[in-house]
Length: 163
Image 1 (cartoon, rainbow, N blue to C red):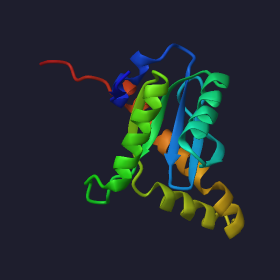
Image 2: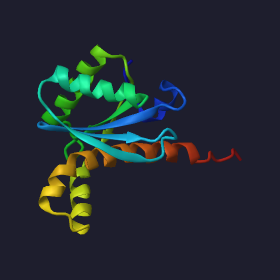
Image 3: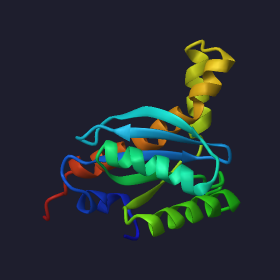
C-alpha cells in the first residue's frame, strides 16, 4: 500500500475501522486513536522508543487490538513548509513500517502541534511533570484530530451547482 492522500483514506479502509495517529519523535512515539466514526481522536499512550522492530511490533499489536485500518503520521515540516531531516526520519519510519505490514499511511502537517498542546496544558495549570508525561500522546491527538477534521470538512463541503 502506498502512502495515501488524506481524501483517499476512506477508500483504503473498511467500515468500522479506526485511524491511529502517531507523533514520531527521537525518544518517544505518541499514539492516539480515532473512534469508529472517524470523528474524535483520543490519546492512547506514549511508547518509549527502543529499537525499530520491538517498537513497530508494539504498534501493530495496538493496530490489531483496536481494528485500525490506517495510520496518520505527523509530518514535521519546517515553519516555511520545507522538508528537513525530521521529515526524512518520519518518511523512513513509514517505509520501514509498510515493508513489515501493508497498511495505508497518511502524512499530516504537525507544525505547532507540540506548542498548541503545551499551551493548553499550561492554561489547564498542569504541573511540568504531568505535561511531560502527556505531551507526546496529546500531540498525536492534535495531529489525528486535524486529519479527522479535514476528512469531515471534505465530506460536508457542498459542490456548487453549474449555472
